[in-house]
Length: 136
Ligand code: ADP
Ligand code: MG
Image 1 (tube, protein in one colour):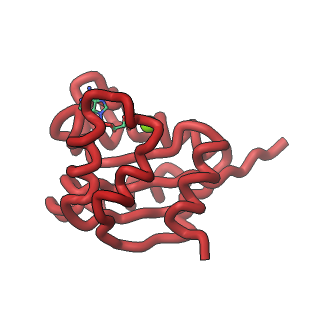
Image 2: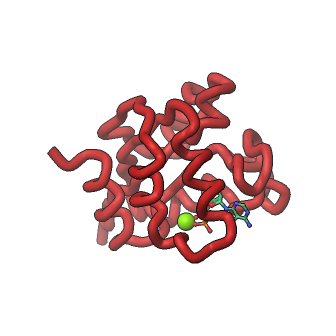
Image 3: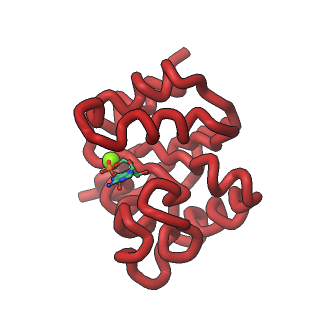
């Protein structure tokens, strides 16, 4: 049975700044994802705090929100069979040092905080995150 899902992907400021967005989008397409929605925006810190609210108790929360709002980002809705897990696999581990060969974070990530991409981690969060950026 097919299980086509949508997931939210963000190309983070460190990658947009290095003009890596086309290369990263190419990796999604090569791996069978359809980019069904896409926009390049910059969010402010308040919006970043709202987006990353699940992490509000973490020691890195403030820096993370400052960082995500520090420059342009590309937000996309990706579609594919089991897209949520498939995107997590293609992204690789949070810390690029631990990410496997062939993953986006291994290829482009600079550090645990500047790790080039975000991807939803569950069906529930994918819906919330897609609405956050694309609800009309
Ligand atoms: P992921 O993005 O892989 O889902 P998390 O949801 O755990 O990872 O964390 C969200 C983001 O917060 C990470 O992508 C990374 O940018 C940042 N982050 C996570 N852990 C740390 C850490 N220990 N120090 C600094 N930043 C971190
Ligand atoms: Mg996460």
